[in-house]
Length: 101
Image (cartoon, rainbow, N blue to C red; front, side):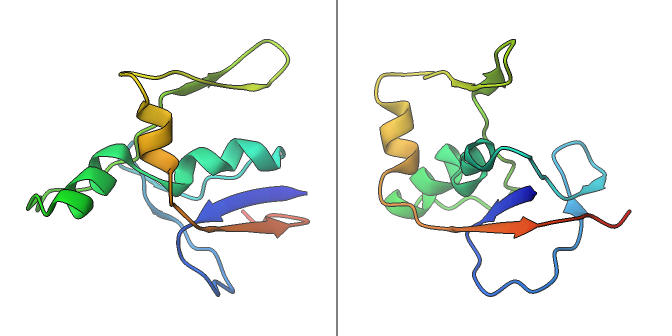
């Protein structure tokens, strides 16, 4: 099984979007919990909540990596960063049994 997270509901077909790397991608993981980091962007959330006008390109903020066993490891860049980034955020996790290239 493959998993994908999005803030958008009712998606019936996932299509590649331009990633932070400048190429069209869809982010999947075989571990459901690994996709949760894509549900919120600290900078985007801050701007929306405070009314700060940002007209640039939103890039995903991912202070994470994986340990030797493939477990997700999150880091806080400042105190309470994870709570501020994900508190009150809702989203959807999609699953697919196979992926077409």
